[in-house]
Image (cartoon, rainbow, N blue to C red; front, side, top):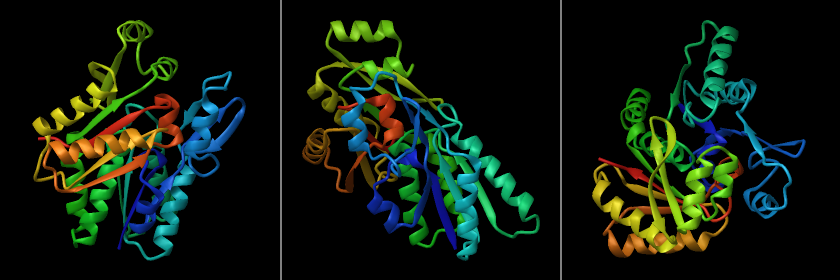
Length: 287
């Protein structure tokens, strides 16, 4: 039996997590002296509604090795012989390192255990690692071996295309994800940055004037970049406004001819801390 696990920044919906038995270790959100577990003690809608009134900018912390270890122990106790953990990029968080420590602790406690544990540094953020997790669950359902699933992730993790744009640059400035100078220029010209992942870190790849042009950019890039053989589904993410995501989904269906599933899922608190309200993202596999 193969257990699939992750950290909470995968941002998969509760429905998907439960359907495919994917467990997550929550990141911690530190807000004005209080610590909350992502999506456990603080849900995204509540967080976004309170974000603008905070005097101090929230910070995030990786799950502890103990939280990962507890999931591993539970998986083994329920009969799983293989464990696959897919973490957010090590270039943006200590989540991957915590999972590797948990793996070491597991084998120290169970030196003769035949259980196989593989930790993947996804080089992804948010629904990027979520895309790999859902694909892994589908491969498992179709009878793929543990080695085949691990091999797919290692081969394609850097091919998961991320697009992210925000409505307000202030949160990216405060979190250090974009320079203050770039943000000022963007505001003056009413430009919205389009970000992706490069070498495991966020990078601005385009600037578009207005949300309509951002969505057009996503669709045009999808048509040029999409690996039709590997992209059997697309994930569209949003922070606070699902209507934006619905608009992008309709545009994708009308203009790309993509016949696969297009999921719409909300970005969680940990990711939303840096993105802020009005964020819109899209994920698929590029050639």
